[in-house]
Image (cartoon, rainbow, N blue to C red; front, side, top):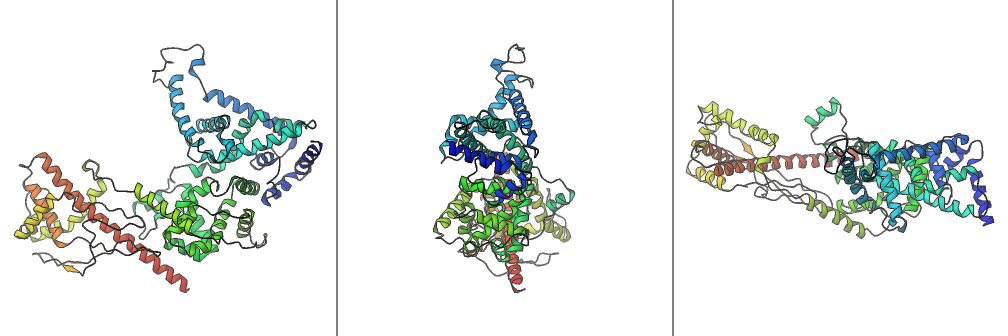
Amino acid sequence: LHWFKLTYNKEWEELFVNNNYLATIRLKGINGQLRSSRFRSVCWKLFLEVLPQDRSQWIKSTSELRTSYNKIKEIHITNPRKAGQQDLIINNPLSQDEGSLWNKFFQDKELRAMIEQDVTRTFPEMQYFQQENVRKILTDVLFCYARENEQLLYKQGMHELLAPIVFILHCDHQAFSHASEAAQPSEEMKVLLNPEYLEHDAYAMFTRLMKTAEHWFSTFEHDSQKEKDAMVTPMPFARPQDIGPSIAIVTKVNQIQDHLLKKHDIELYMHLNRLEIAPQIYGLRWVRLLFGREFPLQDLLVVWDALFADSITLNLVDYIFVAMLLYIRDALISSNYQTCLGLLMHYPPIEDVHSLILRALFLRDPKKNPRPVTHQFQQNLDYYKARGADLMNKTRASAKAAPLNINKVSNSLLNFGRKLIAPAMASGSAAGPGGSGGFPGTAMPVRGMGEQHQQQAQQQRLMKSESMPVQLGKGDVVAGSDAQAPGPARQLPAQPGQNSKNISSSPSIESLSGGREFTASPPLSASKKDSFFSTISRSRSQSKTMSRKESEEELEAQISFLQGQLNDLEAMCKYCAKMMNTHLGKCSSLY
């Protein structure tokens, strides 16, 4: 014990008792030398600016933060049964008044239940996190943070940022307890490493970390006019990661893959693009959790040592992200979509996690940091291929098309239908006056079709789902009545006042290197279009005699038809985008 106490005091002096101590501990953190430190929590407090650089202010600052947390708990963690004198008209279990303690209690209960659900899944392989008192600490800290930050509240994944902080505090408290048995510790040690305040210190460190990381959990979209215009008129051949709302975390992972990875390994960048592996698929988890699920806890702490020691802004995250991709580079390039997905979502073990940090530092500033020894993952990929298949199956199962609901058809789909029939309306008007109803331009072409087209129109009305929505996920094949083999161009018979139209078959989007094949999905034939206009004409002319149920069935058939055409056009757009990316990749490789 005496020897333990001597080494304990000596480590404290080496870390904190010198004029330039902060630079010393930062260097140790970046070089992986805090792995066995018994004062790692104190170092993290300094890195996260929970403690001031002036050592004389440590005790005062720590006491103030702990007192502040006690007040926060008093405000937010309430028990209405122990609230003393109450106005029973307002404070009763049935009250919906905003000032009611009972109303607040039930709202808090819902939030706590959501947090507890995640807390129980925290590091299930570690006995420490299965203890009820530890789970209560995690829940209380996350609950207080959510109530103090009402705009952000609690988001899934925050518990995985808090858990390592609680763990290192616990480890340092254990070491302090052993050292205290041999001799009297200093006053600073007593205050900073007091086990009774583990929860208070964890809250202070977590809130400071979240000041940097909170925008990665935010779902607020960037509200600029430029981005609004881009969403209204998206770029042709846009990739999946370029479509949809722009939030901070999505922008960040796109920036890492599209700029940093492209700069340091153009071949890997192009391979991931060809496979259409958007960085959101794996990158959101990597960044939000600071790689918390990609490494064992002891290796993760070494990564966090470097992240916090480098800068409170966590700038090194981007380069560790790229270094991780480069470690499995050869395996990714030699693999298809399924295996790549397994590698990225189940990151393989690494023998020396500090080598990733060294490579990240070199990538960021090759002039100040020596080139590290290159390590490459070289193992059997069958496991990752199987994991990728599991993920794809889960994605397909969750992405099955819901049955069409006539009452929930979007305005955009109806507008699209109007655009489809607009050319026919114009040509019909040029040919002569139209029939009665809301589609004047369609009556003339329909009347001129003949008996065969009238029978097809009747069949179209009875088949309420001629072309159902098609899910175009990876590994799927376009199915439905419109998924036909590619055929030669077909020509519509010319109507009076109309020019003949050529309609050619359009290939489906299903094409990927690595086992996925091309499937054809031609657009609708002339007879189907004529059937559609005939159906509309019949529904209009018979609207006075048909029952309400028959009218709804008629409309449902029409909307299903439009949905099928919309899917055909979407398939063509995605197919063209895929082919364009492939040709651009080939062109880039030539130069």
